[in-house]
Length: 253
Image 1 (cartoon, helix red, strand yellow):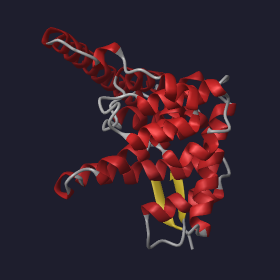
Image 2 (cartoon, rainbow, N blue to C red):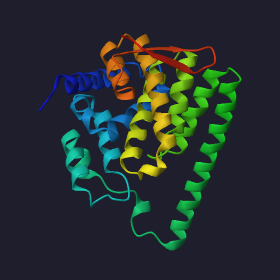
Image 3 (cartoon, helix red, strand yellow):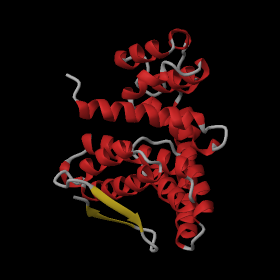
């Protein structure tokens, strides 16, 4: 059953993706994050299916990629709905087929190096952000996200979103924060309760940052829905970005 709340959320998500793809030429740094949302969020399929074939093919390939290739029928069916030709012709990367122990070791070595490089970029970005160089920090957070696309790591996109807001890059801020909240929700759904304290705190903070972004983009319905997600007992949220770089929210009645 489709409720008005679900409808608003769905149409808002569609507008978010459409807006993102409209500004890709001007803000190329958000491309990977928008594609991440399209790959990981099945609710976006209703929009993705109407996008150019090149975008649909990329998203379909992203859905099919991974170590569960060939065993996840739901992924295969979803990819077929988005781009049947890509799904039919897709083959897993050679690295997933007939790997020898030495090849596996090399693959894991490269993954470790990539994660380390992403971690170094994350630390440098945080230092730049603290020193007031938010735009430079946003670039480094974006580079870190491209080096480590792990679905459970949200600090890169979170940093990109928060720094992007302070830098004045609303499309980048929106893409980063929406990706971070999505990752945090997925993390919470698949993790034991006693490990979730920090993730829940981070998700709440990212939601408050996102409310500021939505308010500045005049996305009233999305801001209201995000406020409801963050503070279920509040009538509404009045959020501002403080001079200290943090977001302060009070209940709006």
